Length: 259
Image (cartoon, rainbow, N blue to C red; front, top):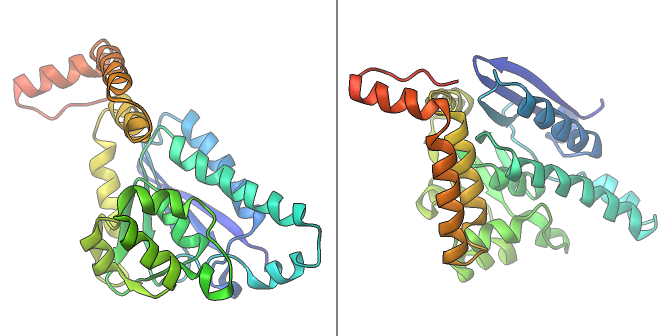
């Protein structure tokens, strides 16, 4: 069965589902391409306010396909490099996508699947979900931005513990560390992610896009540069029609209707 990325809409939220049941939703190049294409279409569609990434059949993603990796050992190194570049293009697309992206995690979230979940803006996980940076367990190093994400969100020693030991970690522990946004009852991660998405969908899309862009830059540029960007985003958003609606709605004590 071919690995696919299924999609459906739920109100203003696009739900993307990794579907590769025979290999516990292991990733494949065709999924990377479909993921990028889905985000390009979603960015152009004003009716899409947020995106949820999840896995089919009670598993988020088992990571890379080890059989494919074994086969690639017999190929020139460029073959695996091209595959990783495709994954990284999807990771970059998620990070730069101007709308919120939420990971909804049930079951296993391993290796590149864990990296993929970390690339999302928010992460909702079932209480019995299991996360593991599995690369080191098969003598490999991380990809998918795992080191970038973990070293920006955790103390160095804690990040290296996850990366170097390759041990299974529960959702509650990652919630304590700040990597998981919310912990759900088993089987409820997608429903809770949809509820979170609905709250985001009610916000002004231009303001959310500015917040995400500013957050992406905050750790890599100087304070003066960040202050200039905050100024520019603020002024641009103040003169957007949504600011007029938001301010009037607040003063009128009613719910704002953004576009």
